[in-house]
Amino acid sequence: MIGNIGLVVGLALLILLALRGINILLAVLISILVIGLTNAIPITDIFLKHFPFGPSGAFSFAGNFLLLFLCGAVFGRVMAASHAAQGVAMGITKRLGVQRTLLIAMLVCALLTYGGVVVFVVMFTMYPIGVTLMRQANIPRRLYAAAIALGAGTFTMTALPGTPSIHNVIAARNLGTDLFAGGWYGLLAAAVMAGIGMWYLQSQWRKAQANGENYVTHAKDEQMAALAPRPDQQLPSLFASVLPIVVVLLMIMLPRVLQLAGLSADWISFANTQPVLWSSFALLCGVASCFVLFAPARQAFWATAGQGVDDALLPLINTAAVIGFGGVVIQTAGFHQFATWLVELPVPPLLSVFFSANLISGITASASGGLQIFMSSLAPVYLEAGVSAEILHRVANIAAGGLDSLPHSGAVIALFTLMGLTHKEAYKDIFVVTVLIPIIAALVVVAAAMAFA
Image (tube, rainbow, N blue to C red; front, side, top):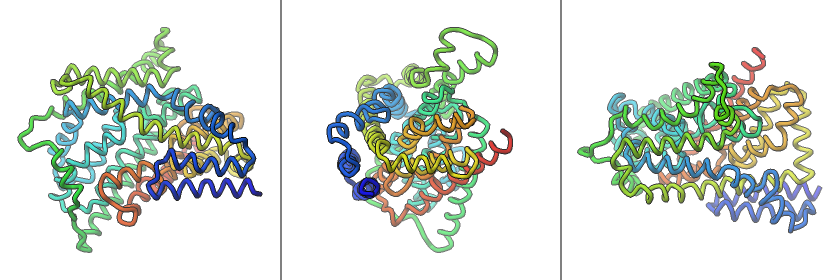
């Protein structure tokens, strides 16, 4: 009983500290101390075994995925330094017009994140450009923030096949699948998320106009607007700007295409069985293409790459800390009772996967953290129950992207901090597009997989 109470208190403490803006690593260390002591776990095992080096340990995760984080962050920095990221944004804006600002924000964020640009770089790219767009279209800042979240943190993160996102790679690495596993179901989920999400945002914009809600400037807007491309600044064309993203995706697709064509080689087998290394290599090819195509990328290249490395460390540490939290939690009797209850629910296995991945991601407020814990602790049970690895890969990925965006989510807090928004002002729209609609999409995929399996 005391152990279960400590588990609940530790989880509540993590959420409370995160909402108060306490560093997530400090919040995790305090929370696991409470959980460990109330569950009679020796303190040496808490901090020197389960948290750092266990199967779901912080350093175990960081060691396995360090290269992918680094390559993704360097690619994002070089895309920004080369002005290619801004070229994508401005190119799409010119073609669609300011009146489609919300659609532009979603499309640009989706394109950049699908190509491997890390979410935080996308936020910093889109916000300065968005200040001008919000002013011209008179869009409330809360809706623009939700459009960024929809494009950068939903369907390209968990649903679209082939993306080098950490979530897709975690599933592939643990299940022995490739990044395209369950691709058709992923496309279905992406269509649901993007379609319903954009319908919701457009309807909220019309409602805001009817209620007289307008764009209201903020001190952060003025600071960020200065970082936006000047009207007279020469940016790469849209075609040239997307080429590095195309290079990344083609490199990821190439081994699978060759394999489907019946070709075999050691490097093809390596690429299809080593998603971390091959995705990292694809991102480095994207970096090389930026270097070749864009002169600004060649200016202070190593300094830019170094900044990318710096960009990678904080997200890696934060994600690893959350996973290390889970590494302690899964040692408790309460978690095993909870996991047993989830697995033994009187529902079809895929529906049980939906509940399990969602709830664990909600507990950790991290899709990647929840997915890693799910894969290490529960995935083998579902494989034994007859769920195919490909379907499990995609359903678990999509489900993990539901409750991960609760108020204590690090990505949500980072977006609000960047844009000077509060949870009271903007969380409702974020909740709809990053929690409610992804849950609907996951249920649609579960129903489709059960119908066609």
